[in-house]
Length: 342
Image (cartoon, rainbow, N blue to C red):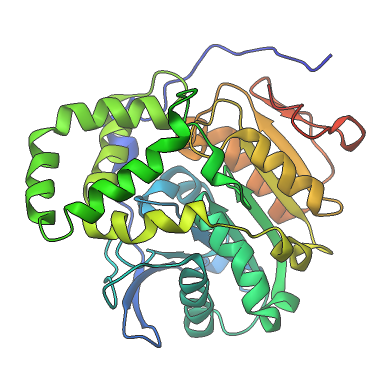
């Protein structure tokens, strides 16, 4: 039987000082289509030298690089960190108007690497849309793969998103299409939608909690998550939304083989269900698949110590450690499609 022990729940973000803004050396990368991307770079500390990898942390849909707050605190000074804001998110510009594909985001990421990490080993870490971007990068930029020494994919999917019910059986798989239609009809009235979002800030926080966290979190953490989403313009959300229903990165996964790959799944993820992470792990020979118990979609904020420990293990390539009571390492022999994540 799969262990199901649970620990007394720590509420991350309960202390206000834990979530003070983190800043590094700002770099602006201008892409080939003119988008101005903001990238934060945390240099390695002198005591740790400069021979280690550059760790690139790619955030998800309607978030920003601030979502890596706890991992950044733990890793900064020990590794060179690169934290780009995806186009239209955080402090990055939008680029040309119109739909944005995962392929476009992968090209952006490749150009960020060309600009701020042109040589030396890199470790790619992607959450949700950031993970999709990393997968697509493997297909579009094979020239970079020899320098990719490890990959971590958190709460993400390689395809099949059109069938996700988002926790609402019978109705949920229609939500994305309904949202697409609503945003299409409001295309020239995005300013009205933005005002409505501000007026409904309390409701937005409730929705953020429901769809992104599996249990109670501190108010500061909830406000951080809601702020990142509220600061993502409606037209950016609309431009990216169609990309999910057509997503198919399964062929790209072959490019990630031959290096340590960590696939972290959140047990109660309503956005990218845990079964999608299992499919990714099964498609990459030797990938480590870890299920984080009692976690929602924003697992790096909800269970920061679990995620950070797993990333540190990936970075150091140490011997296997025992799973904590909040996570389950799924043995390869026991992986069966559609099972092992419940």
